[in-house]
Image (cartoon, rainbow, N blue to C red):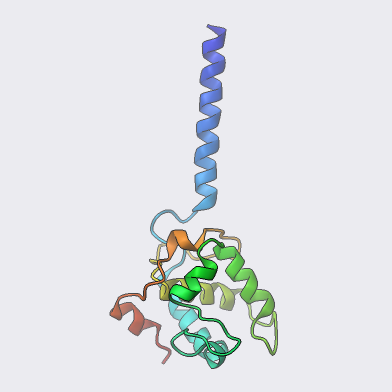
Length: 153
């Protein structure tokens, strides 16, 4: 009887750990890791702070790498959303690294994710969200109605 109780406790502990780990890896659930509103704000911030180097269509040019499509996914698929956040927060824009607000950076990450086919959800992207980009984004452009919402006014 004692062995059965120990086994049940171990199994229960393992299950609880697995559930906690899954929640930590994707706290927003399957619906997406950013909100549509964040991505729309990010589109405006992108037009102001990023499009000059990375181009309006996120295709990149010269030293500015692409931020959408297959070449972006080749580099970022295995890296996390937190890695992308940190890269932008600490090194962008090149003329004034680290000058963007936390809200601007989280919105930019949301816009980049949307531009790579990641769906929006109900919970806002946060600086500490760490989901593999390849788990939420495909590298494919969003449907036309979403892309039109992305265009800055």
